[in-house]
Length: 246
Ligand SMILES: [Ca+2]
Image (cartoon, rainbow, N blue to C red):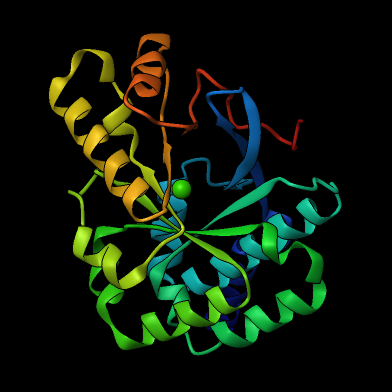
């Protein structure tokens, strides 16, 4: 009993607001060099590696709690920054979206931050372990609740595990984010150039905004522009930072 209580106390503390913080990475319109938004990345004060953190949360069955605490904290900070016309990109796991408490959580968010909801974009993480969730009726039903609240939906990490075009037809995202594996050495990798060009065409046809992640070299940025990419993110443009900087 005593052991259990101690363990529970440790777990609770592990995912408490006091243990968590964020860094924010700007996302740019690469044509006019303006910031269009920021992606929030969760950081833990004791667990430095985010992957270790997510695995730990998963193992302790706390992924939903951590995901929703993270979303609320980032939005709370964003709401105090008064960044009109700028978007806040929030990572979310498919398992969070299908959680029974998720619709109520969304209503609470809307109650507290009514004027910021239209600035929120949920980035649905393409974690390979949760891929099957994307096809479930619960997922698509709760996604409709998200969209009806004027929250935009982005599909994250496209290209990392292949390009799930059939999933996009179910999800109908507003945005897709191309994984950094496509940006890396883009200027010298013909295969990736062809894929990016194809996806730019697909997005134009379906009125989806495309963002290329992981731009680190100027040559790759220039090629991305030539291929028709309008929005980008990556160390070359700006690193994640402690606050929103305009
Ligand atoms: Ca992301």
